[in-house]
Length: 113
Length: 410
View 1 (tube, chains in turn blue, purple):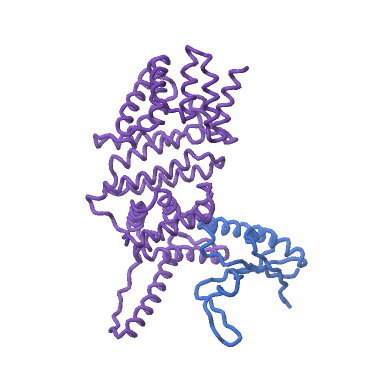
View 2: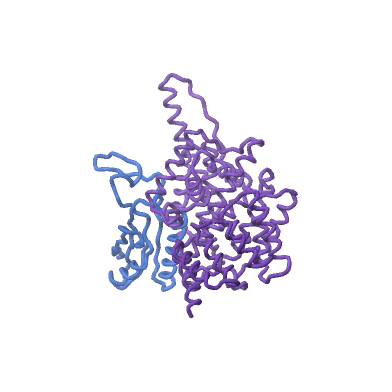
C-alpha cells in the first residue's frame, strides 16, 4: 500500500466566505476525513495557519502572507493510504474544498522507503 | 470519550458576538478590522480543528484566538503610532493595553449597543436591515442578497455606504443617553420588525431562509429584553407579536410555496411553544398599563391562535382593529377590520362599510368584496375576484384567487 498526500489549494478565502459557510465546509471536511479514517486509509494530516505566513522570494526578499501576487493558497494536506494514485484521487473527489470554484486537491505520492 | 459536537451556527453566532465586542473596543471606525479578526479566527479554527479535533470548549477557543489576534493588532497599531509620534518629535508613551472583555455581559451589552448604533436615523431602513444581518446576525453578503432577492453588488454597496455614513456621523458604540433611548428604541424595533416581515411575508419558496430571518429578528429583540433599560412595554409587545406570527409559519404555506389562507390552515402545524411564549410576552407587555401599535397587533394575533369562532373572538378582534386604526391607519388594518366586522356582526353590515373604504388598488379589497357579496348578491362575486386577480402581485396570491374563481365555475 502506497501513501499519497492530498494537498488543498484554493483561492484566498478571507472576506469572501460567510461564517456559516466556513462552519459548513469545516464540518464537511471533518466528515470527509472521518470517512477515510473509517476505511483505515488515513495516515496523517494538518492544517496550515495563515497567521504570520511569509513568502521568501529568490532575492531573499520576505513578504507577508501567501496572499497578494500568489492567487492560490495552501490550507493543509492529509496523507492517505491507497493502492495507486487513482484510488487516492477517488478519495480527493470527496473533498468539500472542491465545492469552491477554482479550488483543487493535488494528489502526490510520498516517498516511503 | 465522545468528541465534542459543533453546535449549529456556532461561527455565525460567534461572528456577531466577537465583532460587536471588538468594534466597541476599537471604535466603530475600525469595524472592518473587527470583522476581519472574527473571520480570521474562524479560518484558524478551520485549519486546526479538522486535525486536532474540536476543542472541549469551542467558544472559549475562538475567544482566546480572537483576543490574541486583537492584541497583535493593537501592538502593531501602537508600534505604528509610536513610530509616527517619534518621527514627529513626540515623546513616546506606552499606550495601556486594552483588555478585550469577552464576558457574557460585555458581549450582550456590546451587541445591544451595536444594534442602537446600526439603527441610526441617518441611514435608510433597508441599509439598517442589511447591516444588522451582516454585523449582528453574521450573514454573508450572498446570504443577505439571497434573503432580499437582490444581488451581491447592491448589498455590498448598500452596506459600504451605510458604514461610511455611520463613520462620518462619528457613531459611538454606547448606549444612547437615557432620555434618548425611547426615541431611538422606536427605530430599533421598526428595523427588527422589518427584518421579521422580510422573512414572514417573503414570497420565496425556501422556508429555511424565511424562518431564519424570523428567528434572527427574535434573537435581536431578546437582546432588548435582557437589558433593564430596554425591557419595556414596546419591546415585549413586539416580541409577543413575532412569537404569535411565527407560530403559524409552517401552516401558512404548502410544500409548493402556495399560500394557505388562515381558515384553511392545519392548526396542528401551529407551534404551541411559540404560542405560549407569545402569551407570556403579551402578559409582560400588559404590565406597563399602556397600549401601542405592537401591543394591539399582538393582541389581535393572540385571538387568531384560537381557531374556532368563539363568541367574543371576532368582537374582540373588531374592537382591537378599531383601536389600532385610531393609532395608525393602514389599508391592511382597514380591510381586516371590515372582515372582523363581517364575522362579529353580519356580512351586510360589513359590505356597507367595505364600500366606503375605496381601496381600489388593493387585490385584498376585491377579495374582501367578493367574500362579502357571497351572501346577498352572488353575481358580484366573480367580477370582484377577477379584479383581484388582475391586481395580485405574487404568483402565490394569483394561484389562490384563481382557485376561488375555478370553484365558482364548477
